[in-house]
Image (tube, rainbow, N blue to C red; front, side, top):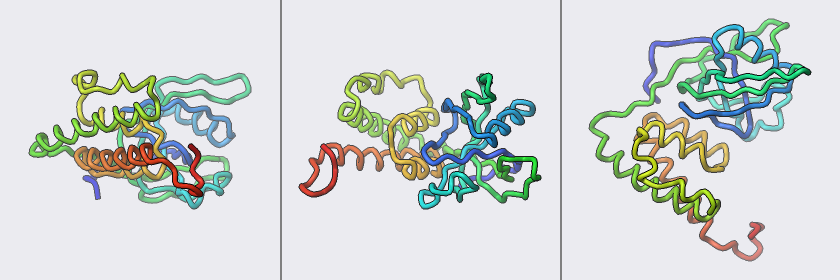
Length: 226
């Protein structure tokens, strides 16, 4: 379990089946359902905060209702908004901190969206782990560059140790976790890592798996498309 701060708060929660938000990462969103339009309206009138949570894979067919979600999500603040003439919203949400859902209180009938009582989770980074994180960082950057060359050759030149030299470890590991089209359960596992060193370790494992899969030709009859 991650380090829990003493902060508990109520957050509107936005369940999605295909998006996992990370701290310090921007996420553009288009809100069109009445419940999420109401959620955006209320958030903009208050503190501009929302909580993003991923829907459990086995419950994605329940998206029209209140699907079961993973207990760990990421809070975000709306930094840009545009309300369209028909009431839809385009917003940009920037991740701020991870949280764990404690419970969801009953909501009044006029409130269409869900609200959860959450506790804030801290991304710990013990000073004694600095040397090991430096090694993890170097391996992750190399693996990310190799994978990018396989799946997005036009963008692979953007991934290099020199390019990331001025970026701190927390920002870098979250940016790389967000940058690749990993399946949502893989990204959820990265978000749930209790510390920056553990997130690097998990990211290294995911990158190695994805690279091995990209390098391995599909077996006859496997169903994989070349």
